[in-house]
Image (cartoon, rainbow, N blue to C red; front, side, top):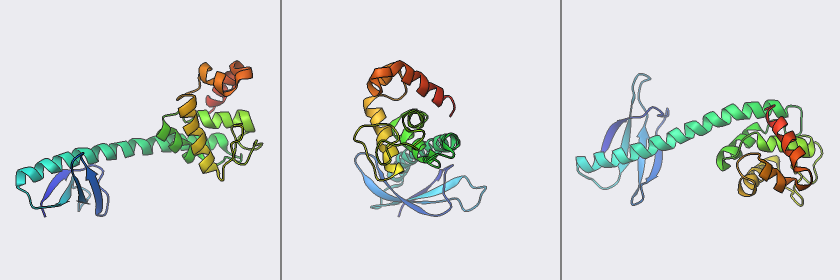
Length: 195
């Protein structure tokens, strides 16, 4: 099997098989991590038909770029979740939503929503999940009921993104709480500032 050594800052401590698709081609690649802490190279083994060295190098370069992009995205996501999960957990401490910071942060990252928005709304609408209008409905959504906080948080953040936007605005408040949207907007902003 052809192989090539490449720089890989995010190499793991054990072999991992990754399926890479570049639009035309899907091949299994085994990434072998550096053997010592001082090594900055990992080995890509391309499991496919034997090819000449130039073709192998070109594929490795394509796969390296795709893998580095994927790993960079994963590192960004991890940093985002770590930062916001702790802040949200501190904000929700002692409430029924306590410990759900990571769920809120992951959903916010996934849907591109301000990670403070959904927890802040839960404070306004249900005292952080203490007084829900329906099972696991901390946001006052009529008819909304879920089987767990994880499911409810995911649905609420996805709903915010789809129907209201990425952040609290007066326009979003007009839709979410029409009768008193200006007060609702200001109160949510005040709660968001606490996170």
